[in-house]
Image (tube, rainbow, N blue to C red):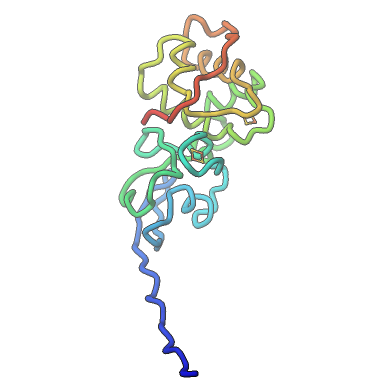
Length: 183
Ligand code: FES
Ligand code: FES
């Protein structure tokens, strides 16, 4: 039987990506299909950002891209060249926690903690957007961040406290309506 000609695979195409991550300029060579989430976790060794669904459904991977919250599992790394990324590791100032980090601790706003980095990054983005005026707004505008431990009442309390909303003490009976992160 004649031997099959061997075909060599084309070398992987990589592209340089320059990012400012948590205030530090960094450069990576990445394949086109690498997501921002994979770059952060596997190349930048910033594992605070979590992979949940990997399909834009849970918000565990939320980071700030130029100050706006995004699902990093849906963002291709090569398209972020020259942009600024802030992850949960970049929110504290040295030993001083970000007010939202402190509020999550104060209000027991987590159980397993898996969703927490995404919740906090999402809340930072929410505050910058300036649209949330009530606890219900917080619930709706953070509906893309799912908490499987159902710590929603405490999460809303922590976020509304930091935002100084009038109904910060209100304990809602309802959870979030799930949906995509608004970015
Ligand atoms: S891991 Fe990105 S939205 Fe779930
Ligand atoms: S604290 Fe466990 S998923 Fe939110």
